[in-house]
Amino acid sequence: MDTPIDYYAVLGVDPRADASAIKTAFKKLALQYHPDVYKGEDAQLRMRGLLQAYQILSDPEKREAYDARREGRKSTLVDVAERPVGRRESFNEQGHFAFPVLDAELAASVSFSLDGFPYELTSEQAERLWWQGLLRGSTSLTGPSLLCHRCQHRWSLPPGATAAASTCPVCHASDWAEYFLLRCTHCQAVFESKELRDPLRGNMLYHPYELFPLCPHCRRSHWCLAENDRVDSLRAAAARRSALIGGSMIVCCILLVVLLVLVFSH
Image (tube, rainbow, N blue to C red; front, side):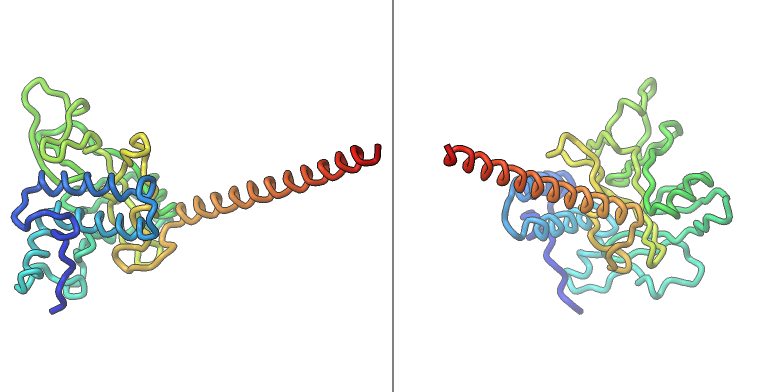
C-alpha cells in the first residue's frame, strides 16, 4: 500500500489534534502562504497542499479513512469503482461526488444527496448547473435541525433564536448555509466547494479554479464552462490592456521625437 501524504505534518499538528486545533493551524498557514502574501514560486502548490490537508482532516469520515491508510490498515470505505451499479453518490480521498441526471431537455426538478445534504433543485437551477457548471445558493433556514456546509455539523436552535443571525457552533462559519455546487463536463460529477470566501480579500467569493485547478474526481482540467468563459474574458481584457499600453507608449515616443526635433531645429 502506498504511504499517504502526512497531512498532519503539512499542517504542523499532532495526529491526536482536535478539529479546533486543525482549523487554527490551517488558518495560520493559509494566511502565511496565501499568494497575495507569500511571493515564492511554490505559493500555489503550498496552498493546494494546505487546502487538501484541511479538507481531509476536517471531515470526520475522510480523516478516519486517512488515518486507516496512514497506519497501514485497510480503509473501510469502498472504492468508487467497486460501488454497486446504480449508486448515485461516491467517495474517494479527494472528496464526495454525486451523479444526478441533469439533462437540460428534461426540464424537471432534481433531487439528490451529497455529503449528507439533501438537495432539491428546481428545473431552472438544474438547467443552470448543467449549462454553466456551477450553482450558488443557500439552504433553508427553517426546520428542526440545521446543517453546516463547511464542516457538516448538525445542530438545533435554542428557543427564540433565529438561524439567519447564527454561526456554526463547531467551525463558527457565518456562511454555513451557503452552498456552491460544481459540475465537471467530462465525468459529470457534481461536488461542492467547501471554501467559499477569501478573508484576505475582504471575504470575497473564491473562483472555482483557485480551489479546484483540476476536477477532483477525474483530475481533468477545463471542467467548468462558466469558468472557461471567465478565464477567456480575463485573458482578452489583459490583451486589450497590453495593446492599449503598447499603443500609448508608441504615441508618447512619437511625440517626444517630434518635440526634440522642434527644440533642436531652433
